[in-house]
Length: 272
Length: 320
Figure (cartoon, rainbow over the protein chains, first blue to last red):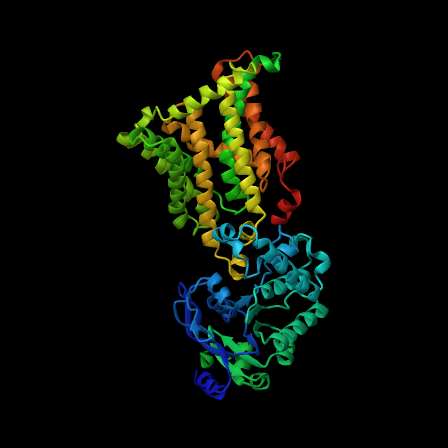
């Protein structure tokens, strides 16, 4: 915990985009997240690592409203998103992917993309009544933007296929491209490289770096491959037993004894 | 056992088949609402008959008890049914899958027993009469017009026409809505609610809207049913109505609004056509056999065309 505060001082001059403080969530007797605290600075690529069961995915779900936290604080751009429903968190500007890809199977790839546009008033019945004709113009521009993103992710030839017919890797790309339609300022990726071949994995990472440098999007991603983490993350947050046990530069974290212990399962009591 | 099929001269039974057509049309309208919920939003609404009852009772009570004009009573009763849809939906759509289905069927049962027991309001099991004076006037006028072309004695034609025109109008509205961004969000929720939420769509609000609209559509079916049997009593709006609606949904195909009409016409044609089977059996056995035949047709459709008559096989497979 002292390390977390020290890290915060160290980052004092950086522009914070996202902060989690003393976040707690228990399921019955099990504390899945047990007082997690960390910060993410704007425009960074931050990795969230930790052994299986450390609470990483639960933390994502708490931060994005899919699970209600028991207590603590979650702030995005200085405003609390604690306990807000998922759609409200998404509208604030946080996009996310899921560990098991959620392609909308019986909808086309293009419909998957167009759905995510945040600026279609005809998505509401009232908006539809107010703009009975002009929404089609908006649809055209949304379609254009969708196709541009599909080109970028090399999915354009599949625009009219059902998303359910895509391969696992293509679905990952679609999920990534789709969340960008919503124009997020921060993106949470839950194991973006799991089950993806190395070539596609490199493509996904290249997209992450490009989007950060072009649009300043902040990335927080869960990853198990240490090679990937060390080569791509600016900062690393390490979780174990529902808490953040270390955070810092990849090189610092790599040699941290607590991190090594957590991964090897030794000295569990000392860590807690 | 020998089966005899007596000759069905089509026009000898024209009035009978018009009557069947009316019932098929009313079920088609009713099932449009189910299609919106089940086929396009992914919520299993087993309480549709309850919303139909609320609409029909509200209409009759406003007209008979409060003396409202039917032209005012019809839209207000529709709004009341939609409001009931919202009230049921608000807690129910927070539940998923089977639990939601159970909550909606419970709501319909509450409506049913209220209709039976709130005697001062609903007439209990005696039901309500005398709400259709305006319709009688219209019908007489329409039959007068029909008699000029020699169809004056076909007194089922007016309701048949009104029912199917109503269906066509609702079909057009629903198909149009389905092709809007609003309809796209509904389909996304059907596919994966969490994905839709992660993209900023308030799934809860859409599900409430879907159920409220279905309730309004159910109410419209309820008015036509009430006019058809000239009486409103609780038994008319039992859960059976909803279950037949689901059979129609399976026959016509999930995710197709026009399939609803085909499914309904097929089901009612088979069910009523089976009356013409001349069997050496007692009447109650024949009645049971008719349902059995409908069951066989259902099984046959599911085996040969599991997506239903107009359903898309690919979508069904992808949805798993």
